[in-house]
Amino acid sequence: MSLMSQIRPPSRKMTLALSLTIGPVVLAAAILPRILSGPAAGLSLPAFQPHGPDLERLAATSPVILIHLAFGLLALLVGAILMAGRKGARLHRILGWGWVAAVGIVAASSLFIRTVNPGHFSFIHILSGYVIIALPLAVAAARRHDVERHRRYMSGLFYGGFAVNLIFVLLPGRFVWNLFLG
Image 1 (cartoon, helix red, strand yellow):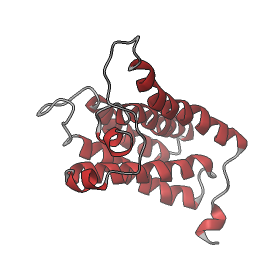
Image 2 (image 1 turned 60 degrees about the horizontal axis):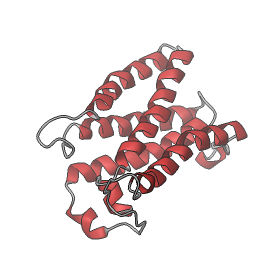
Image 3 (image 1 turned 60 degrees about the vertical axis):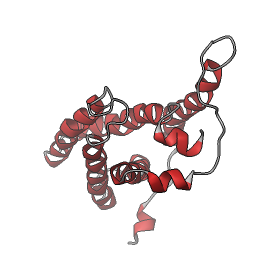
Image 4 (image 1 turned 120 degrees about the vertical axis):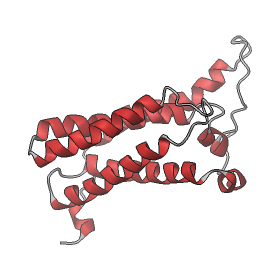
C-alpha cells in the first residue's frame, strides 16, 4: 500500500475544527493591527502591507531562526496530516515520530532565540518549556497505549501550540510580520 493511499482527505468535522481554530487566529492577527493603529487608537504600529517574502531579510537572518522557522512549518504541515488522518495506523506512527522530532527541534531552537528580550528568556519561552515536558509525556502515553491521554497531549500541543504561536509570530515587528506583512 502506497503512502498516498493511506492518507485520507480531512473529514468535514476536521476541516471545521481546523477552520475554527486556525482561521480566526490568522484573521485576528491580520486585522487587529489595522484596528489598533487607527486614528482613534492613538497607536503607531508598523504599516500593514502584505507582500511576497523579503528574501534579503530571510538571507540575513540567523541560522537558528531559519531552523526554527523551517521545522515549525514542517511540524504544522505534518501535524495537519496527522490530525486529519486515521489514528493508530502505520502511517500515523511514522509521521508521528517525524512530528515529534520536528516539534522538539522547534522547542529546543526557540531557547536560542532571544529577540523579544535580548539576552534573556521571554514569556514565550514558557510555551517552549511546556512543549519540552509535554512531548515526552505524550509519547510515553502512546507507548503505554493510553490513547486518551496521548490524544489530549497531542491535540493540545498541535492546536494550542500553533494557535498561540501564530498570534506571537504575526505580531507587528516580529520576524514573520516583517518577512510577509511589514
